[in-house]
Length: 151
Image (tube, rainbow, N blue to C red; front, side, top):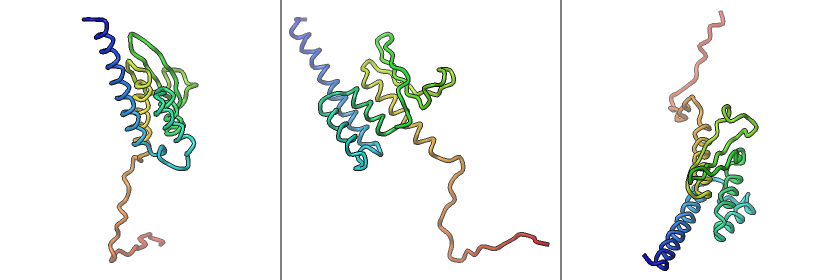
């Protein structure tokens, strides 16, 4: 294989990774609740600017700051060809007490986004109560009755 063909293949892979990252980041941003809001206009504009300038890591961290303000980066580590990103609500706790979520990938931005998706999933499932809601459709014939025995 010639050096030119090898260089072109590496460039193509880089372009494909860049395209996949921008699509993935755009899809995640579109699924967020706070991202398209006008209340956070400056932060939203900054994230869009970071995405357009291909600043993936900064865009991922800004998206975490906007969408999940209670979560913080606990650990970023590179081990055996993979980036590990751990997000936590309480960074001051020891590792063995903390319930951190982790994302892993060969690309740092995608590792951060993977941890973001996990944290968002945990945040949305934790908002649900353990008791199911009572249906609010009441029959027009329904009339409440006091059944207490006051004798």
